Figure: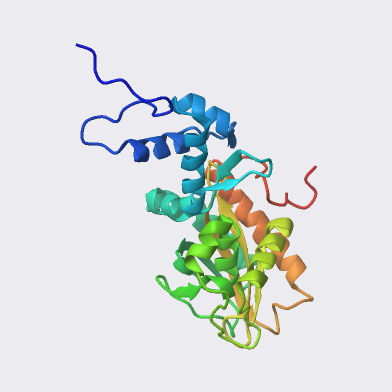
Length: 279
């Protein structure tokens, strides 16, 4: 005896006891690959066996939740930064440490400033590794430290990889917490700064989190091109400032990129600046 007919656009039925719309959403995420960083609504509709209107609602829902973001052209999407925290949690910690620590130690040995590895947890940057600098006057930090993402360099490097809708979710109001007179305190200003971070490839914090503390950070990319972590160096304003940031940033960016390559990132990531000298 034949089973019940499906209405047009209803797609394949879910297996017993499972939620069909959730399976469809996960199937959309499964469509992304390194050589397929952008997918379109017609591709989603064909892959799932649903009408384009249903594909559009599914993609819009994933975008609103921070898992997808528009890819520029209408009806096309790429993965968004909400997956970064999940990716960092799913990544074997020993593997992440093996990829990061040798390069972070080399970076600290060169510049003398304290180095950090951080992941994003909603609106906070969580420090998961610290390498102490060798300067007598240096920043002291610890594993497990949580910093507001909007006013720390490592947090802003992480936020630059998330979808705009996710920013609205974690910052529902237009005003942001002020930590110092230099802190960004409005969501619109943060969005503009995140666009600048993607365009130049690094984030800076000039006494936005603490007085006399300045930091430079760069994103670490995973194999899917998402931001899975960030690395940073931090020190006093006498050593990290407008005059020295360009040189520090070049070193931090190159270090982050070496780590990204160990994690399987492609040579270029769409939407982000390439390394200086890249063609």
